[in-house]
Image (cartoon, rainbow, N blue to C red; front, side, top):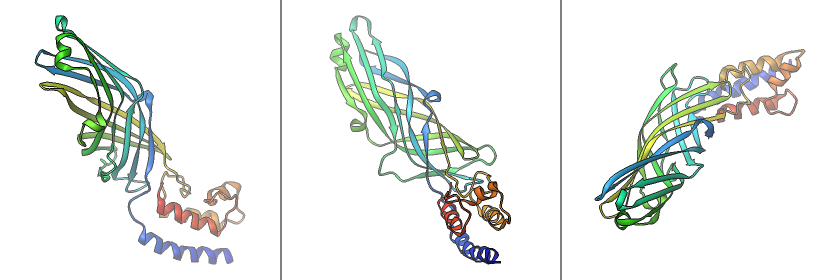
Length: 281
């Protein structure tokens, strides 16, 4: 009887909690899968003595902080932060024949979210999991070292430029994405077109660009997911009450009830569940 009365009292607390629960969930940090995130980056040189282009590639590392409006059936994707950095040196060579050569080397080239920018959000296509972010603020980072010889060297020069200092906050347009859930596992794939222009000398442009595909993976922390559907919702409360009231209670039911991980099924697990519900997965 006491257990039943406790459950009734906790249900009363829950009704107020559900009414105040905000749609936004806690951020999930996703890590770039370098094996699936190799990016081709081209650098085109435009000069009075001719134009040349070359391409190299590198795996990318980094992470992104994302949120969803709902754990079980998300309809909104929210990007809070990101940092995508090349993990290998990018090497470029340009042969201008009798006019000389240009060598360029990119180190730590990447895309980062400006610290002053606000989160961006967009709708997720039902069933498909696809979305488009029309505009994302971006700060290019990395160093490009340029060495040149001959007449083209006199035009282009030999110097290093820091993309984080020499370029202003830019905008990435029409970033496409897809999100998939497998229980607590989350995978987000982003296809990001990017381009930035440097002018190392009068009449000379270095156009750095490409289309990057980043595969990000991580897990939602769902201690309150009692019914094991991949999210925390009011249905998990009723699942929790069921195992809480079970008498006798099986080891599997005790484990399902034990939200706070202390090895027991008690009233304190309810408050742990409320915390998980408010934080989201």
